Image (spheres, protein in one colour):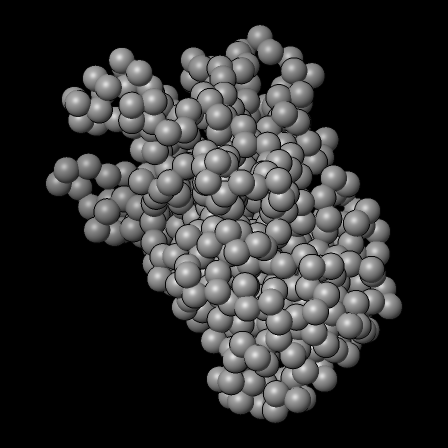
Length: 517
Ligand code: KIV
Ligand code: ZN
């Protein structure tokens, strides 16, 4: 049976989701989980975009040993130089270079003739081959490109050494049978194609990313690209955990092998959701909260008599019942550290570990059962963004027939403390007004979500927000026993991400030709 390789781009295409800005620590944590999940290729980022992006890819490349690490580069020498600089220490580096091949992209975005695009594609692959043997080449917007032009350019890049050919459905336009036909056409018309890996990369604008990826697998591709939970720009990318389960559950149909560690599915999904603030819809396939909930009497009756009547996947298969009661108030630091490692949080430094252990001890006084989800929530609370702003104090009064009023004290970037009060229509609004006054930043609240880390009245409250400021969208998250304090922490987290992004923007390399990824 053919082996299907999984190429994860959560840290590159996924991070392009509006309002998602991961810091270095968060990227490393996700990369380690992807490695544990058995992902074959981790696309760690786009190093030419900014110095911190290069640094993050470098750190991931140094850390990951059991997966290939890929870095994205446009068809420019400086992008490829940056990709190589970031990948130098990787155990198995891959440079992923791309150029658009559709008439609309070539004419309006690149302002290049098809011949010039072909020349640049060939030059970029040839240049990348100076540094690495493994070079993936992508035809951006392949599904709106002329098939014979694709055949011509693929032939040319294979001749200069491309090892993987990726045909992305960049705008989520194609249909399953059409995408399969494209791959068959290319396999029939490109000599030597059997010596390279063929790859599918789908976006979900028409809700077909997973279906299109599976159709491509049926048509013979051996690599499939996507993200955890399907996060990504616009409607997102193909959800890798869904593709994997389709291959596992319908192995007799697809007749291909998936070697992913399926039991790690829920853990990696939760981590990505919490770190990115992209909440998984409860009805989402495989990892949604309701994916195994049986509501109707007929279904409940059937499942009780035989689980397979209404369940095609067992919860254990994806690691759903492994959220064990792990630690209690007598647990020591060593057991605590080991559990964090098992959760993939082994990169936490000693100082943060101390803080986290203290927070855990405080929590054991308030909460009877400490689950993996609680530990994850605590760890997320600690792994803020370099704490440019800090919430020092907060007092909030609200109730029926009372005007909600909040006073906050905020530590500002220069170290000074600022105390401000404000009222609002509701308690959270008064908190946000007070923080806005104290920080001097009036962030526009686009989205506010609250959820509990586990079940029970004593569960931790997790608040996720999205805010807009000067045209940029930033995420923020906060965790606390008290949801008002969690809300305040989420706002401060968003302030810190805004501060970090502003600093990075100043450092960013100027993109010369207006191309973006
Ligand atoms: O969707 C796309 O075309 C991409 C390429 C850069 C591979 O993400
Ligand atoms: Zn993409």
